[in-house]
Every structure is written in C-alpha cells, then in structure tokens.
Image (cartoon, rainbow, N blue to C red; front, top):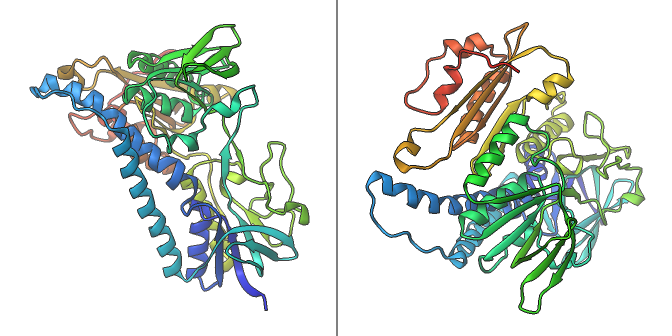
Length: 454
C-alpha cells in the first residue's frame, strides 16, 4: 500500500526544509526526499563553507596589519589540509542538525532520488524503490554550476569542486564576473595563490551600482588580484609538466595550476519527471510558477533557486515559510522582492539594499546621491591602503531612502540593520536624526549631509 502525504518535498535545501518543517508544525503529514546532502548548496558547497574560506583567507592580511599595533611575531604558515578537514567536520555537523530538525518536526525522510510520476505520485529511488502519493508536491531542488563548453572544459573546476581541493594551487585563473568568481579570487589570493580573474564583459558584478563596481575593481587590484576584462577562454590543455595551458580569445596563453570556471548557475531540473506533468519551464530553464508558487500541474509547487526569482538562501527560506502557511494555514502569500539585502563576500566585502543609480535612471526617478569614501581607523596604524565606501540614494521628491550601498569590512553586518530602516520606509531626514556610534564605520550612514553631483 502506498504511503500518502499532505506535502511531499523534493529537495532538502534551505527552502525545502523550511517548507517541510513549517507545514508539519501546522499539522500536515509531510515527507522530504534528498539524494545528495541535507542543507542544500548553501550549507554544503555554497554560503557556509565559502564564508569559512573567506575567514581563512583574511588572516594573512590581519597578521600583516598586526605589526602596526605592536605585534612582532612571525607570520604563521597556512595548512590547506587542516582547513579542509575542519570545514568537512563543520559541514557534517550541520548536515546532522538539518536531519534532526526534520525528524523533530515529524517529517518523514526519504534518502534517494525522487521524481514525478504525475497525478500526485512520486517515485523515490533510494535503498529501495517505492511510490508515494501526495496532495501537494514541492520542487525545491535548487541549482547547479553551469559547465563551460570549450575544448578542455573537463580540466576546469567549478565552485563545488573547490571545496574538495586537497592543496592550494600556486597559480589560478578564474573565469567569470559574478559574485562567486569575485569571492574566490579573494579567497585564493588571500591564501597565497597568484590569482587572475578573467571576464568576457567590460566590468564584473553586473547588476550592482556602477560606483560600487568601479570601487571594488580598484580595491581588489590593491590586494594583488590581476583583472582581465573583455577576454575569455578558448581552450584548456594539459601541459607536459602538469600545468594547464589556457588559450584566450586575444591569442595569449596562460600557464596555471588550476582553472575555476564560475560562469553562472542553472536550475537543477533534469531527471525530475517533469515530462509526466504539465509543469512548464521559462525561457531561462527555470520552473514557471505563479505568485503562489503553483506550476501548471495542479498540486505541484516550486520555489527557491529552481524558479529563479532571487537566488538567495534567505529568499528561499521566506518562500518556504510562506508556502507552508498558504497551504496549511490559509494565509495569503505576500513577499516583497524589492528590498532584499545582498552581500558579496569578496575582499573588501560588498553589501547593498534597495536600488542603485543605474536602476534609478532606468525608472526615471529624480534622486540625490550621498557618498563617503574614507580610510577606516584600523588602517591608520596597519598602513593598509584599503578604503571603505558608503553610499545613500534618496528620492528627491519624497526624501525616502531608496538604496544603501557599502564596500568595506563587515559590510553585510552593517547593511542588515540599514535594511530594516528601508523596509520601514525611512527618509533621509530619519537617517540624519539618528545618532551615530563613534568611532565606527557604520556611523557614516547617519552623518552624510552633502549630496554629490551626478
């Protein structure tokens, strides 16, 4: 006899686990299937291990900076093997936490690959194959690194592979201009690799405020990362001495120990059994859903990275909770995608919430721009040339703050608090009335008084 559930979730990443737990807490009979690792990309090969590697890579600069504060010890040596071991142990711990959270919530766990059979049925191929029924099915399968197609692509690494590397490459070439490429450029450079970032466009970090992009380009180069724009990889070959030869479109050749191809991610929709349903894909290959996360197949829903709205862990979490409440508590789904704070853990960090100047011009909104570029107090004694930038964009008519941007240490921590003000509808006058904490970088957000020309 087939098991029956109120909700069957395929994919135990951030969105899937959140939806399963909340649905169970609302009295639904819930099951979840996962064929790889619990916690999804973020916990296993994304946000969490990447941030741990960012921390690791920042220590070299901290050791150097300490000299200006009187510390005389020699710079310690880094062990990539120890970092890998400790990272693996932490991820295993988090995997266990996710499994325990599901079990505690009363969610039945299927460890295996699940696919749709149509008419509310799911086939799970795990230790044994079985078919289950569900009134509602949620596809929360996330995304996967996009693979390049040039000759020798099999010799390159993707972002998943980096967390299994056994040693630090002496020389690395990174292909891509998104946040993953820029973050790993800082990681490798900080851990001692000679690093080049190669991007086919004129400027990396498309979609961010133009001034942020320009400023980050300047600061990254100060740290020793080589930047090459308007160029791309044609072919990768294995050199007789073990290195990789990389042929570029400008006919130059690079010899490196590793090539990271970070050219984007794509929805993980293969082998889901979509052909057995009326589920449709968008032009970008994502699963098409309406405002209630419903696909064209009755009773089948999708959320998170696989639908491609905002591919961020906190967004998937919010969507999972909203869907559970919609299905089992009759609550309306009311998610605002306009004011989502975002961070890029490159070095220096970027964090932003709201609109940038490019978007304001596209929307024909009259605005004022307030910008502060300064050398943080810590860098006065460390002799670090790194600067911090903060920017506020304000609607000229209403005085409402439409966007806040920061490049510098702890940018994500600072912008999270600022995001609350923007969601609450704060005006520039509200910012001006707020007393700052001195001496901090964060106080600049409430002390900028003179708009710059643009």
